[in-house]
Length: 458
Image 1 (cartoon, rainbow, N blue to C red):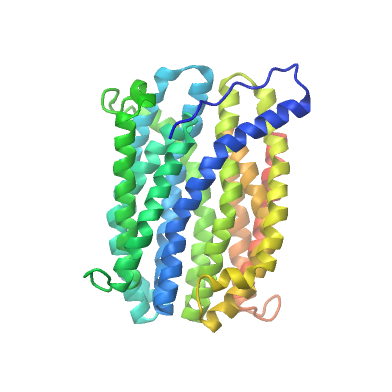
Image 2: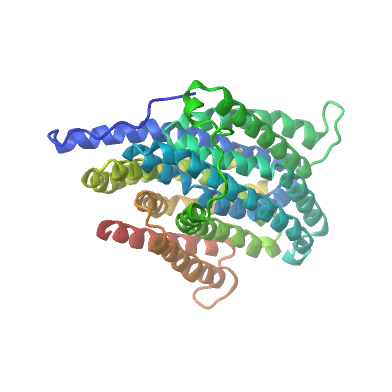
């Protein structure tokens, strides 16, 4: 599972091209395992959606609504806890290894409070589901799904917190392997619990929640066991090096992490709010929207992983007193993002019928999803560039202004415009679900332009 720590930057006498290619290679070594880990974690949602979609449209819609509620919360807490990665990476770059375990433990304390908050919020959301315009059966399935899912929240956030240690040290393969195990376990559990196999009750969409909770719990146990027995972590022993809560360190992590978590929440909750707005249009529209969200989320994992790797590398270079290399890497990596977008766009356009067909055989759902996927293909350019830019800014620990940019772009521009285009004739005749996806293109373009401008001037 282990790998070499991040290398020191290329000597300054090397050519610009040699330095850039060396840094891109390091990004690939860091980002490759992150990408696989993110895809494996996404696989849980994809597996839930595909298997629920082949069970019934109502169960697919319920799982989609449930996911739209827990995903923004999870990413908020994930972003808050991700302050550990650049902090630990910076300490590693500057050689301050004695600071690593205190940071890890403060992250664990933050994770403990986050667990309680997330569980309370998800359980309180259940009774509100009928108010969203869902059918009674769909609302009941969604509530059961959430009640099952919360049992895995403690394990999920524990793993997320410990990932701050392993990723921060450059050991990105650890979470990759653990995420793969979790995803592989989720598939048979879904099959058994959705369809009632091997003597288990047939639970439909609710079974997706239980399968995810169980696979998350197993992943947390494996992570703890690995950190205990691995020779690479003997100098970072969790129990031997535990420390009491340090409020100054906790405040510093929250100062960095809360804007990251809030920016992730703003972006993902925007998609969740769109799903809730579309609920009155019926289960078919919600199901098609959810399929497109899953497809685009999987594609998004490539630039997202690049952004995560860029955060780790920029923070390491700053800690290693190489600000010029950090600046050069932050800017040149935008070219990599542009190349990724140029690949994603034609793939989504040309393969949309095939991709949607993997999720459902319902002709009405397919018709909705293939239309929406055209909009998703168009916004790839802006989406990839904004996540690359914000990854670099986080490496510089610049999180507050990017949060403001995200709020303005998504909540100030995208959602009001999307509502107007979808349900009203204020601008053009009502477009239905496509109106929100057209507004996404506008909102993401605003975010990418402003974030790149911020990065260039920072």
